[in-house]
Image 1 (cartoon, helix red, strand yellow):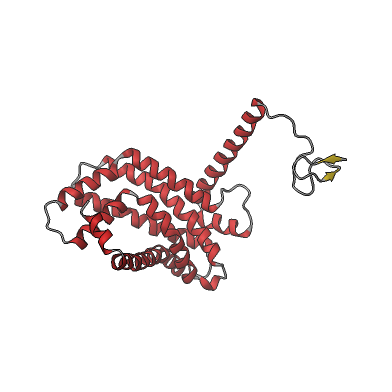
Image 2 (cartoon, helix red, strand yellow):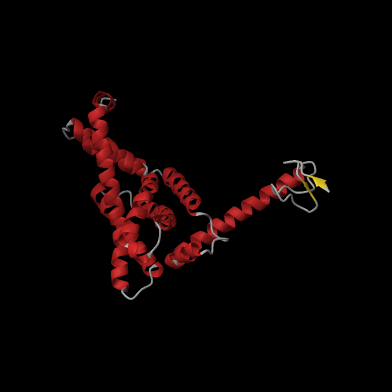
Amino acid sequence: MTLCKNCAAEFDSKFCPDCGQKAKTGRITIKQVAKDLQNQVIHIEQGFLYTVRELALHPGIMVRDFLAGKRVKHVKPVKFLVWATAISFLVVKLLGFQEYIINQVKTQQQLQDNTPAMEMAQKLGNWINAHPSVIMLFTVPFIGLASWLLFRKKGYYYAEHFTAAAYLMGMINLFNIIVTLILTMFRHLPLEQLTMLGSLQWVFNLIYFSWAYRQWMDGDKPAWTRFRGAMVVIGGYILMILVSALITSTVLTLFRSQVDAWLTQ
């Protein structure tokens, strides 16, 4: 019999039946640490890259299979979303394109006479422009809700729609890196033309969601499914804007003096 060093249970096998501890636990060595680190890094890399590949080639099928139980090879949805957002944020930050756009916008704003409300809207707009990946992160619950509302007859829970939204928006964040690279190449263009060029990302987002939902919600009405898939993105952003407007109006009402102090900074 072996006495578990973790929970003090007695057992006669390679692992403790109560807590899962190994029967034999030796001293921790550099070799063991290096081996554990190597296994963890390789596992993370393979799982993440495999998930990216599946979401790039057939996103709807990947989501459907994951919800059906095929999950071993994939990074979990929230973890994938956080990693993709962090990677996108860091790369876009290094490129410096968002800061360039903000400086261009500020230059134009200085030529205008703005009310306090306009100044607040402009500051919020500048923050949004500087953190597009973070904004996408906060839209996921609303996109999941829009997905559930538009496809509620399919029988999926809200949590499953949230899972799909996390995967798809994570992939959108990675695609945002490519868009930012292209925009950086054309940064010499006037601000209006850059804005129009950047808006093409919205077109891509709609097409990607439309394609993904056509694969996921395979049915008899493909055109209607594609349309609703695109509306998931629009509906999610509308819901987020409505909730944000409600929160903003509440903050302005309850903390007016603090907001005025912030605007004068």
